[in-house]
Amino acid sequence: MMTNQEAPSSSPAERSGKDTHPSGHMRAIVQDRYGSADVLELRTIMRPSISDTQVLIEVRAAGVDRGVWHLMTGQPYLVRVAGYGIAKPKNPVLGLDVAGTVVAVGSAVTRFKAGDEVFGVGIGTYAEYAAADEHKISHRPTAITAAQAAAASISGITALQALTDIGNVQPGQRVLVLGASGGVGSFAVQLAKALGAEVTGVASAAKVDLVSSLGADHVIDYTNHDFVDDSILYDLIIDSGGRNKISKLRSALAPRGTLVMVGGEDGGRWTGGVGRQIRATVLSLFVRQRLAMFLSKEHHSFIDRLASFMESGAVVSAVGREFSLQETPEAIRALESGETRGKAVIAVRPAGDDRAS
Image (cartoon, rainbow, N blue to C red; front, side, top):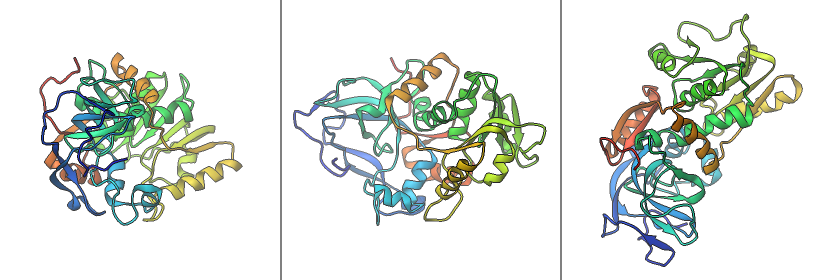
């Protein structure tokens, strides 16, 4: 794949639509090294080129989640070993979630054409243009704004897979969502309710109202109350917070209940929360409770499933503050400090009513 520093292709593999940047340049948030938000800079660089199986998107909005923080800092170090660059980022432009308009498609692309409104997972989406693999994006439903769509893909499909593919949630079950006010948690609360579960969300006092507004049957303020209650055991726990001990989570889980760990922010620089997840998976071999970890699959089939919930109104993106492109470092600092309610969005091209037409 070509990098974001290379000039745009003029080969037959790229069938162009509208072109608002004839010079081939764009503004983007770039990092030359791993580090805090201080390493991020707003620069003018060349637009990305696309392969035969990719599309070029004129970005309207991009989501901010914990994943971009890991890619920015290069921590845990497993991120670097996984192929994102040992000494410095392979892709200098940050950003994954995306919503925007297709302006060019590769020669092998069959699902999209120039002018289509799309959302999903892109490559370097904190920019005016971004490339995306065809199988990682979907058409944006007409009733959903670009900001709502940009906040949805990664967090939404992670929550959906945790509940259904891994957790096998059933109507009437008791579901506990830790980190219920965050990106994944806010979607998990709504999806679990839409799937017929009785949902308890755990959040800080400042975010209890948000979790209640998402439809949680019960909300626990963890600063004043412990979610462990001997009188209540949960059939399924979605842990998107990642800081509780496995023994504590198991004490709130039914004897044959399921714990699904989504990410994890504890642990050291080398493995982060992965070490805790691996230990839980091994322990699961020796206990009746099911303790599961997983990596979300980025595929349009999951995005399509999520879109159907959003189109029906059963699920909405809990969009918090919207930041401009140049305010991206501030957005990531807010995420890191825990100030973000729901999911922050980078409004690359702000608009009033930007529902897909």
